[in-house]
Each structure stands twice: as structure tokens, then as C-alpha cells.
Image 1 (cartoon, rainbow, N blue to C red):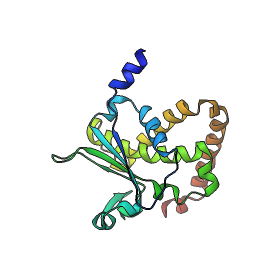
Image 2 (cartoon, rainbow, N blue to C red):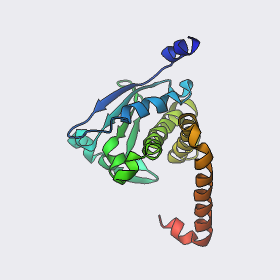
Image 3 (cartoon, helix red, strand yellow):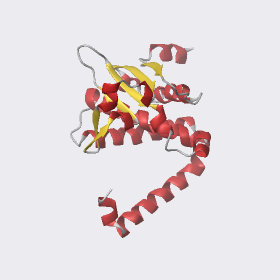
Image 4 (cartoon, rainbow, N blue to C red):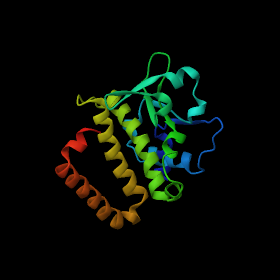
Length: 195
């Protein structure tokens, strides 16, 4: 009984679905809710709205708008997610563009529960990382670097909580992937800089 009272008092952002000519996977909203439940409540304070949308739901001005990502400007219509800090006229919000997240993934990949869920959760946690950096723990190491740090930290906690039974298999796979990345970085340093 104590857990249900704590869950009801937990500040949870409102999740709004805004799609135009797009049908998202049935599991998408549930994954977003589960991912938010894995974030410590104090980090979600001040975040009021999460909008699940697609590119077609954007207005003409929004499609033409440009946002910063990794030191470059990109069109908002091509982004996977976007964080809007609070202003006097609107609360802090996160927009997740489901079609931009799922479109580049192979069809079979989306059907694997762990893979597709972790890709969506990683985008959400990156944007939550921007909120944490902006409101709760400002760190001066570059906004994208801090958001990536929080995405990795929150994704690990979410993965351990949701897929605890798969950890004995996923841990060696993740270690192998990290080892291959380090070897590539040492063998091909110029290739890494050109990306």
C-alpha cells in the first residue's frame, strides 16, 4: 500500500500523443511511462509535458526551425527529440518524434522488445538529461555531452530494472561492443575524427 501512495504523489509529466497520418507501435506510450518511472522523481520536477508526435504533425514553421545537435544545426523535422525549457508563458516540455526514431530501424529490429524499447528510451533520457542539466544540475561541459551522460546513466538504470533477466547475456555483449569500439579508435583515429 505504501508503494501505491508514493507512486500517486510522484510528479509525472503529462504524456500527450499528437500524430498526423502515422500509427505508432502500441507499446510506445507504455514504454515512455515505464521509462519515466525509472527516473528519480526529483529530476522530473518542473517537467510538465511530454509530446509524442511525428514529423507530419509539425507546423510549417516548426519543420523549418533548426536546433543544435553536437555543435551543428539540424532541421527540427529530422530530429528524434527536442527539449524546450520553461519560459514565463509555457512549462518545460519534451517532444519525441516517433517516426524519426523508428524509420531508420529495420522492421525486424522494431519487433525485438529489448532493442526497440532501449532505442526509444535512450532518446527520451537524452532529452530528460537536457532538463536535468538546465534545471537541477548545471554542469559546464557542453550541453550535448551532459545530456549524453545522463542518457547513458538513466538507460542503464532502466535496462537493469526492466530487463533484469537479460543482464547475464547483455553484459558480455556490451563489453564486447565497447572493446571493438576501443580497438577501432586506436587503429583508425583519423576515421573517428571525420565523423
